[in-house]
Image (cartoon, rainbow, N blue to C red; front, side, top):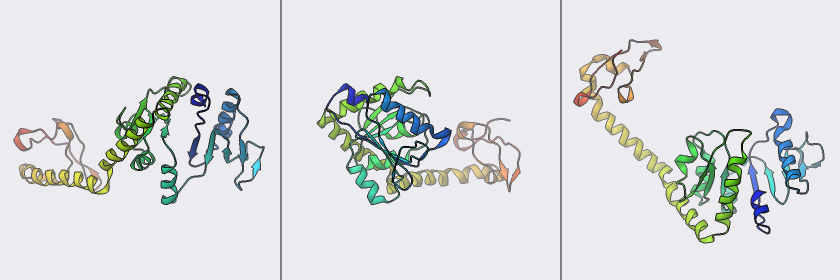
Length: 246
């Protein structure tokens, strides 16, 4: 809505896919309807669970308008990929995230990401300024601090076809980090390293095979057969401390 206001004639459209959220007395629908009022846009069409038009906001399960459409959750892979290929940017405005699989799927189909810079997922997937953009993050109630920046990023990409294409190419290229073969190769390297180190470590203390290894020498509580075991201190290969002192 902001991008369209900043550039009349842009006609950017937001498609949202996912489960309907009726928590907080239908807060999501009410907040969205208020945005249509805020930006002076015609009210959207509301559809109920039978996809029939309704004027009761409490019955609304989908919204349709020239600016934003709320869709159902998509489970079919071919349908999902068709959606990716018909859109230009994947947007994420989360306040917290894990590893965002839906963003990874979109980027593997060449869709650049524009996301809030929250911990974990987005910053692992987006290389800022190369295959997408990370915008400043702000807590709930202060969203305007990043929403305007996100709108500017949309305008930047929509008005520069060459940059949008370059970002799309980079989204394809960097997605191979998470392809099955490459992920397994990384795991295999880790397992090979463990196989080299473990015999020498285990030879130093027979109890070591029953406990974990504390990364960086940090203290770690061990569990054997569901029972709490003693914390141990042991020097590993080449004098590396695998368990800190008690």
